[in-house]
Length: 323
Image 1: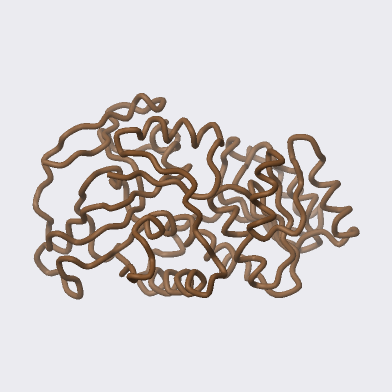
Image 2: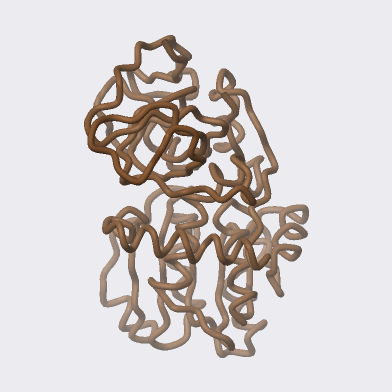
């Protein structure tokens, strides 16, 4: 038996129930992991609420870190006791889980389980956004919305390390301090300031090469007004709601802009891309270019409280569940 959070019907945080479940032996190609830490992400709310449908009942969560405690048939390259981290299909809100061995990344001893659990989804998201969706280079100016959030802080850190000037938007003075500490040269309070006008003033009219927007509805289409001609708008999340349908001619009118709505799982669908992205992330961590700040820890049994904190935007940096 193992403990797991189960959702039988989509709903609010109260829809998550801690239950004892029978875990079958790992199937062919699978391993069993005993979690030491479990990543918390805003996308977990989308699944819990039903915005992103999932077969019922299900266990939420897409990332975690722990040790291998059992091997299924046909598993090569792994052994019991190996330290691993992953980002994969649903099922991480549990003491233990079975998972396809292809989803695992070896976790070096220098990286803690908590960091491993918190770095995969957010860290690999920052990696593909900065290195593949738009390849940030020295001299670029980038705008990061929700710059004190989990992904936002990583974009600030890594963007600065790549030689970019980082402008961050935040919802409070306190979060502004965190964004600046992470690497944002300029901070804009989007609740009280016209962020597009401030970007124009900060850049003396040059505007930004790329906008990374994990907020969505409330920052669109203002984000487009922050871009130079042929700049790129990257919508990678929708914390305030989905960006509504718009006339694609708007991109031409505002400077022949590019717009994309990427997702991590397309970027790591091939094993070689997954491994290369994870290596790049771990190198950035080892160099000190990227730090994964764990600002909140919740017992697995308090998953509902964790979701309330996420939804209320009262968390900054990364948060984890502890079995």
